[in-house]
Length: 267
Image 1 (spheres, rainbow, N blue to C red):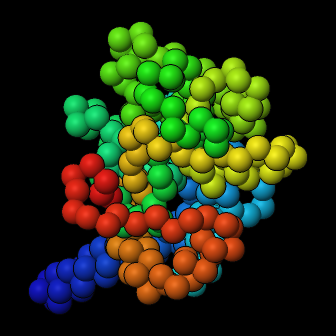
Image 2: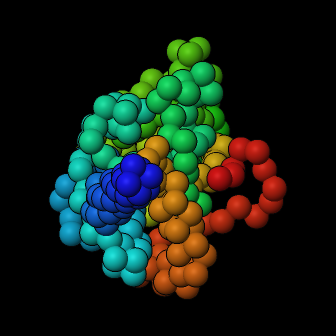
């Protein structure tokens, strides 16, 4: 009788543990169905604008991924100046946009552990009025930049005091500064510059400087919680290349892709 009781007790313990495991797994699965994505609280349309627009390139891509895989998404706008701490100090599952290159190697305590493949590539360069496209580097003494963005192409000149930065959270304001001669150039993607130029009703022609360095970089999705969803997203990106390319055209964004192996451009 005692032996039978021990066997029954062992079975009950096993099934109790199994039930706890299944409940925990189910809770995590349910939580994973509702994904919270931290996004920048600025407008950088057509790439993203989660505070003032119902659509953008990145939102179209992320929403389609969610719909195809049974997820719902909640976007939470967060301050750019606290970007490196988002995943650790806010109740979010993912961060967008992100890029492993943006994090200092020594700041590992605030680095995401998992990064997706690139959603798309953007160009970092200095946008100028067309008539100034061939001005030498010595012409540039003041630059406009989005608040919180890193002036990676101008660090040395800034340290030497050769270039000053006028930053603002509004790309529209930076465009006005440029056309009114308050800055010599602005460091934004050309698709963003052209969009806000048009919304202002200005007929100036903007272009990248031909004499200044440019760089390609990507927007990625990052997380410290869900590496399996990052892998799922990577597979979806690979399978939906045509969808992404079609939307680049829809949003009037030039296709940018690295054309050579490089340590600086990739990812």
